[in-house]
Length: 479
Ligand code: BG6
Picture 1 (cartoon, rainbow, N blue to C red):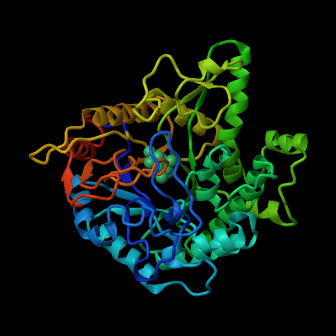
Picture 2: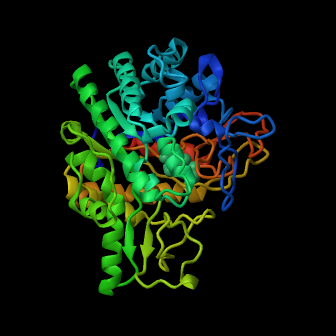
Picture 3: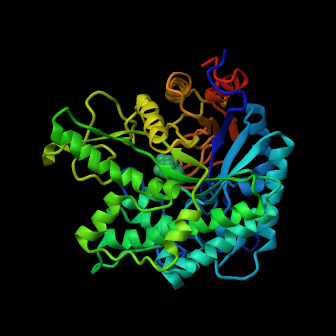
């Protein structure tokens, strides 16, 4: 018997800017991602002032779902997906962001996509903002530094809620809103919030000010959404990278415990509708003024979420007294004392592969919040080889996903955690967010396109395609 509920939402996850292309089609305005060039592992993506003619912007065309959506949805349907998590490109609906009327052609595109999905029995699960803020809002208003953005976002959310109220039930407000906690890498504040920190500013204080406005925008969207359709399920979306202590040395334990506040800050506010005391203490300690105005706290309290959507790719480790030579080459989310975990391997991009960390995460989040959890991103970014006969063998990806599904099953069946569904990231190959590469592939469907934007754009099924189809058909019994 399956360990998962009958109505478990098996799906795949994508984000508009990473796969749609059509960056200026039918009235769409440029977004913050449209001025980001391609980077590579260890080579940062450049954020340019405007779209420059001699630069390559991989998201502009991406995998051109905009013109291939029927063919792609047919493949998703063959795979047996029950849901597809994607986002609505904000600047397709409001090209500048501050208009009073939306762009009808943009709204119609999502009607067409959602209708096509629903026709095939696939329910759309929608993120309102997945790094796609209209560029104009970042440039002219300073992004979420400016409280006007709260209204612009609320208006955008209302338009989407009203238009798609009979087509979408599960919504999320901001994708991985907590990425910006890592203020060392400018792409996070830029893509989350349309903000660049000036040299004379304290990045952490700016981040908390911006976060306050964004948390208000999220809460206002939840309040508005519930009025439009009380049956909506509106969640938050956070990136959860658990931080383990390096050893049982109490100093390591406390270093990890403290660092975990960075992970819990955003969901604490989204779920409980108030600032956690450790954060208030931090604001006080550093004399941060985060700009709370009269009435804000009531809004946060009234706009709490129904479930927690989260991404899980890896875990990380902190060592209280880590020396420079112990830090190693691992992705550690900007933690100053992050060290490699000697017990687990990493991907070619330095992402630690740790399926047990997913069960650990599910338990920690559920114990803390007692809200349903939705694993809306998880996956294995790797180089794939297109063979001459158009097959692609990706056993490592199958193994990665298999072990993570086993972790979910254990959390559900043994630990009693409530999990709504599982949507592995990049069900079809798409542009990597952090590096802008195509060669970091996550999909079960291969797209013939390379880092420079060359290729036929043809789609081919990888071995993982048939494997995942079978997993869905048996509700996780055959792995
Ligand atoms: C998450 C994002 O950070 O991880 C996605 O929500 C992103 O947008 C995914 O693509 C994987 O990251 P990357 O950098 O490998 O594409």
